[in-house]
Length: 450
Image (cartoon, rainbow, N blue to C red; front, top):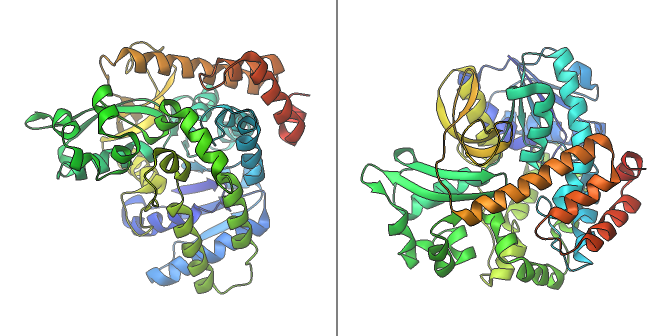
């Protein structure tokens, strides 16, 4: 089988390669191609991958290219992990709304909309190349905003585009640990959109365990979402939200925390990765060691603004790149394994709704449990959900669709509409101001919406 990784010079590609090394016997890829528009980044990441192969004692051959048609041609699976506008764009995504007292975050609120406006046209170009050069390939999409991007490219690729995110599965594993249970023994009743989901039930052989967990403050204090939201609010909701819901439930607190921070998350990563990518010329072992040190610091500061706003301090301890069940690379491998080997595995994916959430139409991309086999994800019906969650999902889905339409059409009016409809944007006037500054500062938007 052939695997193409678009965005192959990205910082997290070694996580994918490490997972491929560990699963080489079950996945059977005999051709791996890394594609990126930046040859320097490809060379830097290639050195890290060679270091990983040497450490593992065996190589999984790969090659690099800046030619997208060549990279995609005849692929069985295409992984997409691109960042249009690079981290400089993320800094602008975050800083523009923040200057007006509105949340500045990569995937949530105006930042996520702006990110999507410049990313969707490029992703549609990738989908068209796949349709021509690899019509039977599966697109496994990591590119953010993952749900919105997946819905856009499904216009070209249909159900062969699957979005993945490690937030839901990470939440489920942490909840299982808090209950002292093996996650494989449990059913997780999770529903929503990407970065906008809730865990409303955890079922074992003895029934739903959610009430037991919510009543146990010590157990709640033992995992990320429990400390972020606090037992009182979680009991009020009767559910455990995805960590990104913090930006909705505590929006003003988060804005204050970000403003008090000496640097934004995007600015921090921009400086950190600039140092990493300037290190070409290192030996493969040194390149791998530098990458690991950089990644460890990156993971420790994940969601720092939310933790600061919650007053819990400390650092986030990310997963180990040698683990085989965590991170977005673990999700990607699970999806590929399930499709290629017809495992019929239950995974939480971003896929077309069909009838999973009764209040959305069949084509809306949702993030729900799905049975994944040879024919791709088959979403499981969720059943009734609380009114407030349904209303927020419907509201954000309207924002996503206005954003997709704006990105495809290049309509400034639709871009402003998407911003103004978002619950975190206080007025149409603010939406117009935010979009005007985005367009003035981002070349991709100047070209698209000129």
